[in-house]
Length: 128
Image (cartoon, rainbow, N blue to C red; front, side):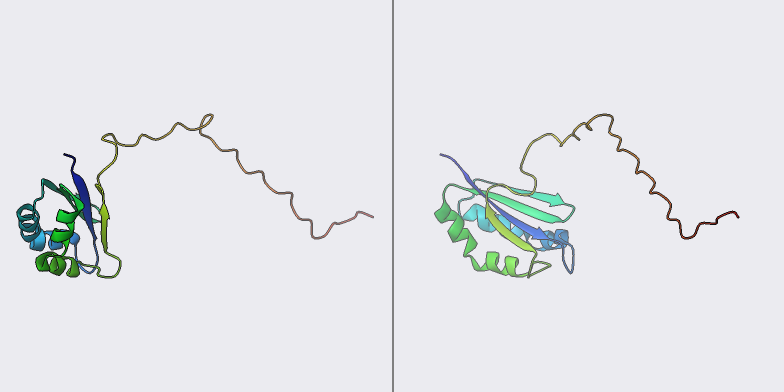
C-alpha cells in the first residue's frame, strides 16, 4: 500500500513557529498516530516549521484534520492570516537530497564595463 503524505507548514509571525511546535507537537503526533498515521516528521526551517504526516488514504487524513485538537492547534499559529499552509505531499524540506550547486557563469563571469557617456558641452570658448 502506498502512503499519502500531507504537510502542515507554519510560518513565523507574532512569535516563532518553533514555539508553536513546542506547544502543539505532542497533541498533533498523538492525534495523527491514533487516527492511523503511518509516519510523521517535523522540520525546522528558517521561516517556520513543517509537520509532515503520512496516512494510508485521504479519509484518514480528513478524519485527523477534523479533530477539535487539530483545529485548535491550527487556529493558534503565529500568523493566522498568512502563516498556515496545508497541502498534499511532502513540504518544506522535500526535494533533492543534494544542495543546489551554483551554475557556472557564462564566459568568464565578467560583465562588460559601462562606457562613459560623452561629456556635455555647455559653452565653448572661441579664440579671437
